[in-house]
Amino acid sequence: MKHEEKKMTNYYIDTHAHLYREYYPEDLREVIQRAVDARVEKVLLACVDAQTPPMIAEAVEMFPNNIFGLIGLHPSDVRENYEEVLAELETHIGDRNIVGIGEIGLDYYHDRDFEKEQQIVFQRQLDWARDRKLPLSLHIRNGYSEAIPILNQYEIGSMSGVLHCFSGGIQEAEWAAKHGFVIGIGGIVTFKNSKLQELIPKIGLDHIVLETDAPYLAPTPHRGTPNESSYIPLIAAKIAEIMEVSVKEVMERTTENALRIFKLIQ
Image (cartoon, rainbow, N blue to C red; front, top):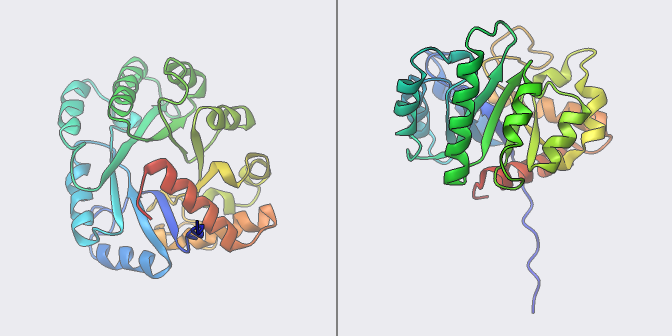
């Protein structure tokens, strides 16, 4: 029997961005086209509230072969009306090109006014992911000590996803690897004295995906300006430098990880 050669992935995936008309009112189409031209052929758009799904739908309509969406309530957007918002968001899980749940999690960086509500909303959306077998994009900021016990209530292997904009340490990274999650690395890795530069060699390419979080956290040399998915190659180049491997290897390995996690067709 003739063995099939493994198909190599010669493009990038931005696993977390916010390419919406709200942030790019005059040039959204051009921003997405620049990403495609930079070989960032697939971009996942994270959801933050009930107003996000129509903006995801607009971008999907423009580039149906390149744009994919997530559905979720961002922890910082959790308020007293969370039940109403969750009910609205759940209706969009079956929308075109929706491939996961996110961004969801716990964020206690600014305050803990809705600490209890955040945890309720987090677990409710974890249930969505488990029951529908959808991957997750997790936003955890100053909340790992609370988030991991919640996640540990679920059977190992029952969920997978990305720890977006990873801010944990080696213990959290090892927990992620054990439980089927990968680490989202974005523009912060290019910042001077970023702790990620020491952490990435310990994590390894098998447990990393690329992301921008555009329009936020643009990599060097664009820091301080609106971020774009077209800057993903800059992030890959920095990781290649840190790992002492080729940019091509970073591209191939991280893209394969993203395809596997989000069950995207190559």
